[in-house]
Amino acid sequence: MTENELAHLKVMVVDDDPFQISIVRRVLGLLGVAKVGEATNGSMTKDLLQSQWDVMLLDLNMPDMDGIELLRMLTEYESPPAIIVFSGEDPRLLETASDLAKNFGLPILGSLPKPISLDRLKEMLHAFSAESPSHSVRPEMVILTEDEIKAGIISGCIELHYQPKVDAVTMQMIGLEALLRWRRTDGTLLGPGSVIPVAEASDLIHVLTKEIFVIAVNQAARWHAAGKKWKVSCNFSIEDLASPDIVAFVEAVIAQSGIPPERIILEVTESKLAQDPSLILEQLTRIRLRGIGLSIDDFGTGFSSMEQLRKFPFTELKIDRAFVFGASSQPAARAIFESSVQLAHRLNMVAVAEGAETEEDLLLCGELKVDLIQGYVVARPMPPEQVLAWNAERNR
Image (cartoon, rainbow, N blue to C red; front, side):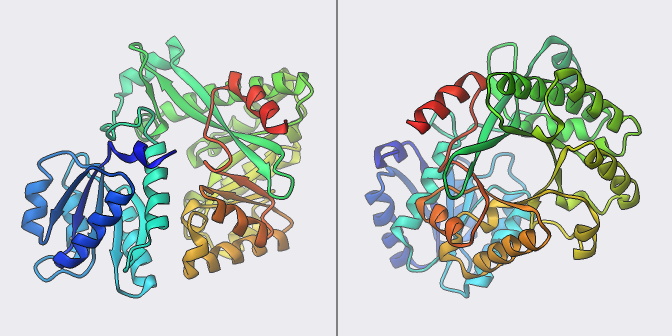
């Protein structure tokens, strides 16, 4: 991606220091960003937010309304801009502010110390721009209704894209994660955020997970039959794993496909493990006894104790992108990243770094002896028909 591909972005800079705003404007200009707005206080920010902005660079220290208050205010907007917090404060404070933005449910790209690094800002804007399929303005989130999801499951709206996971040393593809996409009747392709929250709030999550799992396992079986011994990961919610029939269902789908069980991995989000741990431990242990792999996803973002991690029979630990992307320039994130890799190895688990997006991220993954890497710097999620061609081209 070139700087010209950032020209479409609309970026708002919020800082009470006009000199700092002029510096940021110059940096954004060097990156090719043509539309830049500025606000020196909360009232001006509210006025500017009447228009749609893609990204907001937000200073934390302002007299009338500090950055944290402004973050809280942004939660009142239906489609707030993606946030980059920047300040001359302690880097730990910057990271705390970023975490608060996440807790508020705001889209957060990361944090930047002052003076702003052109290269780091470029990485963030490139990553943000790459997430927009049209490379135009960020679309508003479409949330499907329960009835739309019910009808869509029946009519075949579920599609899966697959994101490669590669060996950190050889860079050869070892496996892929199956990711939900939803094809509306008008041809629009939606991401999981349009579907999963509504499905989780109802019993639809069980039906949805089962449909996704069947599609993913059958695709894995086709690749296996073609001589590709890739492992395919599929996400399961805690609600799914609490279902009494889930072990029999998983076992039956894999047996019917003919693929060896060890080629399938179930991913479970760490932050929800504390819900009824005894039942979940029982189900996961039974699944693991079948030879199926188990991955703890988004590690580092939840509050599971080390005791729980020790008890659950996970084979893979996926370190969240918050501690991977840009960790080479963020001491606190790097420390968590490094200790997570060491913890995984001491527990005989595969350490997976997800969210790697730059060459610096790749170098750090190698330095910290990560096992597998998953992220945009390797490959974006892609339809199954593109996977073989992508892998062949990579091997060449």
